[in-house]
View 1 (cartoon, rainbow, N blue to C red):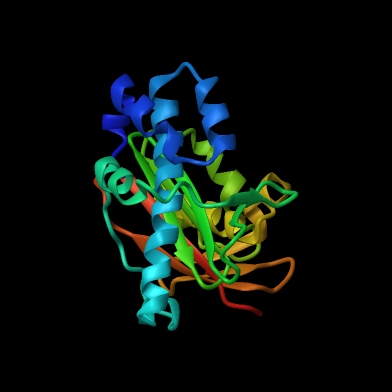
View 2 (view 1 turned 90 degrees about the horizontal axis):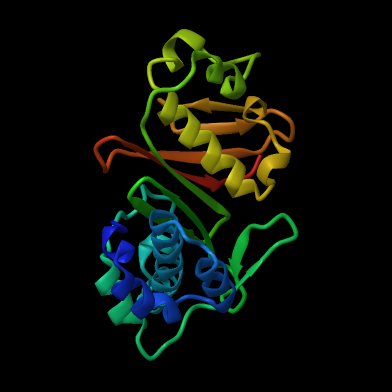
Length: 225
C-alpha cells in the first residue's frame, strides 16, 4: 500500500477508526506524518487481508492450501477502507515477544512491515514474516552484522545488501524471536529461495518479490526441519 494519501490529515483522521484500538492510541501520540501514515496503512492492510483470507478459505483457494509463490496484490487506502466499512478491524493480539496474530482466526498467520512510502502485509496458513526496505547507501561495516560467518558466500551476497537484509529480517520475524536473534545465525540461499536457522535447524521458504523500484521486499514462510 502506498501511504502518501494517509499523510493528509483528512484521510488519516477518517480512516483511523478502521484499525484496532491499540494501534489507534499509538498513532494518536505520533507527530511525524510519515510514521503515522505507515502505521495506519499497516493496520488497514492487516484487517483487509483477514477479510480476503476469509473469502479465499470459503472458495478453498489454492493460495492457502498449497506451497506456491505468493499472490501479490496492491491495495489503495481507499479500497481497504471501503472494504472495512461496517466490519470493524480484525481482532489482533500480540505474543510475549511482540509478534501480532489474529485472535479469532486460528490457523491464519500474518505479518507486517513498512518503509519509506509503503506498507506491506503477508498472510499464510503457516507462520510467516515479511520485510520491506527502501534502498539507501549503507556503511560497509553493516555487512558483518548480517552475514552467516560459516556459510555465506560473501562476494556473491555483497552485490545486494538490502535483498539479503530483507530476507533475513523476514525470517527472524517469521520465527517471532524479534531482536533476540542475530542475522548471523541464519543462512540465506537467495538463488534457491531457502533460509536455514543454523541454531535450530529449521528451514524456511523465501520469496524475494521484485515489485517496487528502489525497494527490497521479502516474504518468509516456515516449512519445518
